Length: 213
Image (tube, rainbow, N blue to C red):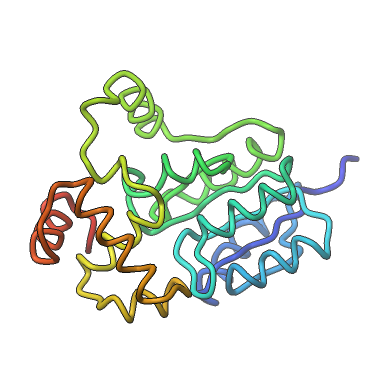
């Protein structure tokens, strides 16, 4: 008998971690062997145990999912990481895959899709939904036609979304663990890249393109 897939769940909501554990407990070939409530803890636990798959939320305090993913892939290049998010695929999926994720799933997905995705990434394959596969194909063929926000760096994109959500540079700095000066640099860069003049235009852009709830 083969050993069960050892899963590390990283999500800052206890209720979500509990729900995921419940879903996966029905699968005899999987075991949730650890839970982390933020990115820093996820990295510590990844270093201390043996894992087959990390199931990680994109939005977490202390160290967000994309940053944690990059660090995990640097330290454990062969460890499959399946990203989970409440955000629609078009917001973070391509960024997550470029950063080394083995797959991306929205939290609205059916439980059986989660089980399928975990088995797939544990076997060394990638997991993407049909709609995301289509989007990836479009991104390759229409690179020059991509909207401006897709050409931003991860930090610039995070700054854009936070400004559009009404957060101040100080609040953004605190959340991303950066100085206000650094956040100002990201803001200036993204304004230049997107040919926008101020926060009001950034907010309008974010709302128009559905980047903020």
